[in-house]
Image (cartoon, rainbow, N blue to C red; front, side, top):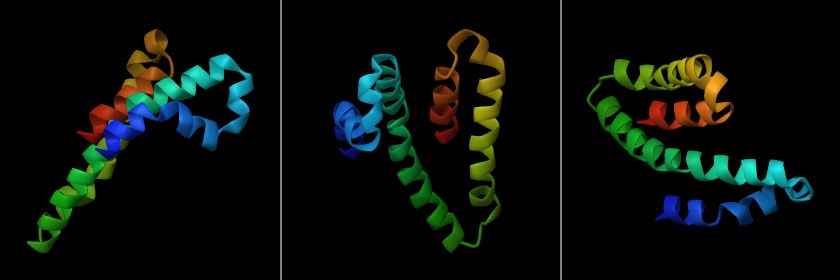
Length: 100
C-alpha cells in the first residue's frame, strides 16, 4: 500500500524534497520517473528485512550479511552494461533487480 501510494504521489514527493527541480522541467520529470521506478524497492527491502530477521534468529548469518553486497554488485553490473543505452535508468533498474 505504501509503495503504491509513493508511486502515485511521486510528483508531490519531488515537490517537497527537491523544490528547485520544479524550475527545470527535465530535472523534475527525471526525478519523478526515477522515484516511480525505484519506489517498489521499499517493498522488496521490507520483505527482505523480515526474512533476514528470521534467518538471524536461527543463527544463519551469511545470507543476510551478503544481501547488501548483492545489491551493490547488481547496480554496478547494470551501470556498466546498460548505461550506454539507458543512461541513469540503468542504475534504477539495477536497484530494483538487486532488491529482489
